[in-house]
Image 1: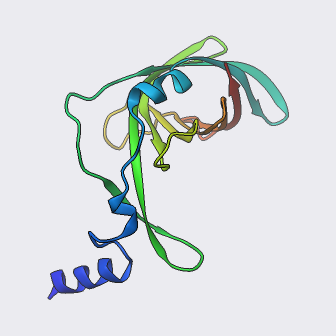
Image 2 (image 1 turned 180 degrees about the vertical axis):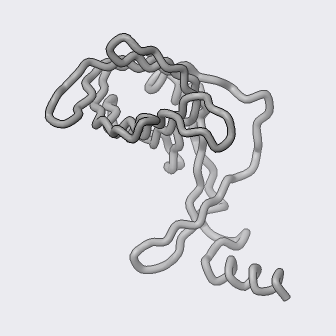
Length: 163
């Protein structure tokens, strides 16, 4: 019974194997994404009206195996549920803030079928399960990263980075 309800939900949400989204495949590779994200990004971290320099170095971190199938995520739109195909590029990072250097890892999430130099960057400092750690979330759009850095102590910094 539970499986039947779940199948009905996904069919109603438009995520069946016949949806138009699943028949299209991304037309880009990691080799196309790498030059637009990998390297050193410099900018400012703004906290309570005070701007301080910040540097983020991103490095492509390939995974040992790759999938040939589509990753799908349900997304609630204003009018209806929709399916979204996503591609993920794994990254490692070094974040330098004043005299503190933090190692981080995470990914760039691309929701377009054709790469257009934009995506969502999500990084986290290495920490054990349940531990509080620094987290960086930023939007890549045409050579600019904008977002926030949430520090383990609860402080939030607004970021703007370019190369």
